[in-house]
Image (cartoon, rainbow, N blue to C red; front, side):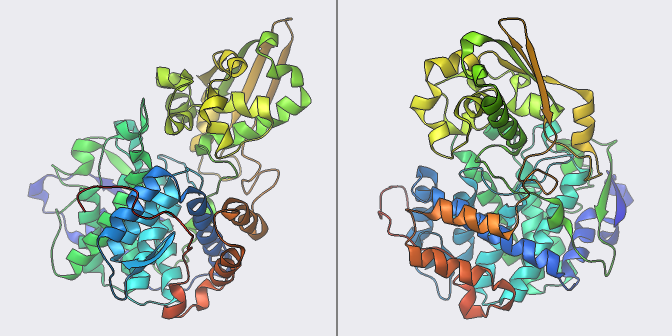
Length: 499
């Protein structure tokens, strides 16, 4: 890997394209690199993971809405597949519908560093274009690897959330780059697409603040849709704002760290294998990634100390954790909604006091039951929930930001004071399912997650058909690539809009 210095330049500098970050990203995408068996295996895992969480969300309102919007635009030949239906649609609309389905439950993969990301959000857009343009499994594989590489490298270097910019601003460029690799486009075309994708996908983090709305699931899908459109425009010879990152009126100068900003962005050297996907990790539980380890610790504590489940026995629970966890999903956010038993599912998903309480009491976490209104409003839960707070701990913040995978951590230390004066202290660094956790996810666990979430939604034969196709991804023909979807018997035409 090589670090690339990135800073703001006045227009008078006339910064050469070859010195611009967008060009360097495009160079990575334009180079044809063989994919290692280890990386190939992980791509297959994540394709299965995406389909699993999409299956579980097919009847949820945001997913129904997005799917029906896509279907309203009519059949397209050859077209792209949409989860839950056999209708073929234009690739940008398939990216939209499938992106919402994948993101709705907040239950797929993650990478956290200077910023947040769900790099699996790249897959719907890249897959949709692959199907419509009749590429094969090998092409799709390389495109997905690029999408992961670019997004994770940006996330390692550039913080968006510090300036209240939503993390999908790294997704637009990565998905455009991945599509560029898929199609074998030249550096110039990918450069223009990356610039357009970034320019159209910068938005504020209000979508993840306070009363969190259904747009949370739509935001990455919108970025994927914009990436498809950006590549299409760039292929037609249309250009983008330049330099998009470094310009004096560009993204860094006005949306991020300002005119004096300096970043070091790591990117693969020419000829270097793309391995970034191996640094990412999936979720065992349907909750914000920073809650994964805390769920595992809470389940353990509730089993070992059942008295903790009764609020009458507990005086206070303090989670000592990283800056991100404290200020984004903890009491440091200052959001009263994080303690509101009538809050939306999306809001509860971003409340570590709620999540820790329910996991402690129930000894498990379920993507539906744990968020049910009657579960959130239970009197003993509300009483215990209000006793749970978070505090930033400098060491856990340091470990959160560490570039050493062996010490990078997303958990913390819990200190529980009981009403009888005794104290219970425990800690956890990473989730059980993390590659360094107690029970790391491998193919068996990804397949198990798919079977569990698809049970009762997909027919048994459809479950087996998808798993057989997905596990042959690198060798799929263009015709077979359209089998990377799931179909289900679902109600049709349940929403009404302009289309």
